[in-house]
Image 1 (cartoon, rainbow, N blue to C red):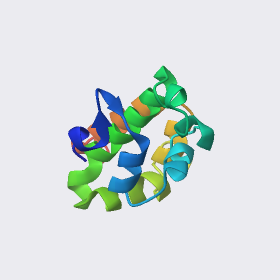
Image 2 (cartoon, one colour; image 1 turned 90 degrees about the vertical axis):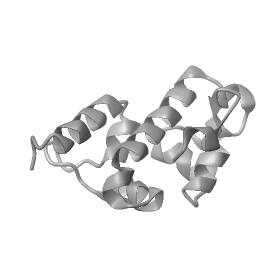
Image 3 (cartoon, helix red, strand yellow; image 1 turned 120 degrees about the vertical axis):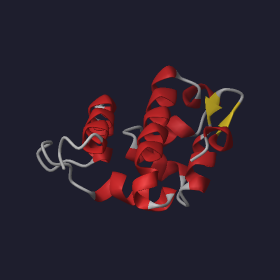
Image 4 (tube, one colour; image 1 turned 90 degrees about the horizontal axis):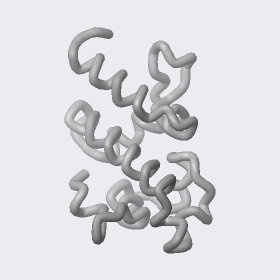
Length: 116
């Protein structure tokens, strides 16, 4: 996912992310642990928390996209694949809990062959 295609003026745009992933802005809000209203008002979209969560989603998708061959397959992995060592939680559940850094570190470890 090219950041330039999902951001405008230095801010992540939920509707552009949703379009790239062929889903709704409401679903994007849910997958990053925000209420659907967080992506409806400009002041909420531009808040630090909302922008951080959207950035984390984009970072995770970008980090695994090469492995799955497409943004859509990476998004499916993000939502549904339990990660070893995280009590069966998915990347989405971890991001919702504010643990995106752990997901990114896990992906780096897998890429380095630690869990291979």
